[in-house]
Picture (tube, rainbow, N blue to C red):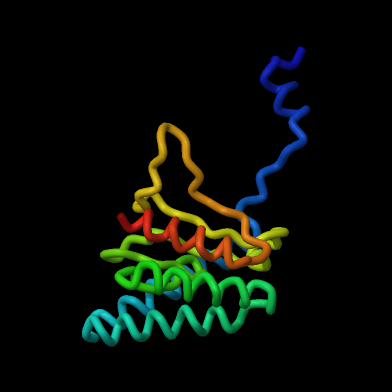
Length: 159
């Protein structure tokens, strides 16, 4: 008679196949970003910042039209609302950091075949509001009111 563990193992139909192709691509993007950052270590701070912003703008330019329009607007909002945040790539997506630590980031819908793009905030963001607060927002389009709200969130996030 087989043990209970053996019968449970044979009835399990779920199988872990590892990371998705999109997740593997994001990790490869991150490795390339780290390699570029290491190569820039001898550069001045201004040269590094300019190169990282060029990388972000180039990545935005590669996006599908819908994601590109959103990413361009969010880039403009973040850089206006928090000019001290430094644009950089983070897992192949535009992000904005203070002292090298990501505060917020944009994730295109196409990257992970999602139905909407997201604007996310890390634990570095000062968005605390009681015991529970949002750290990620779905973005399908941006109205003037949405842009104001994002600007306010970014300003709050940097303190």
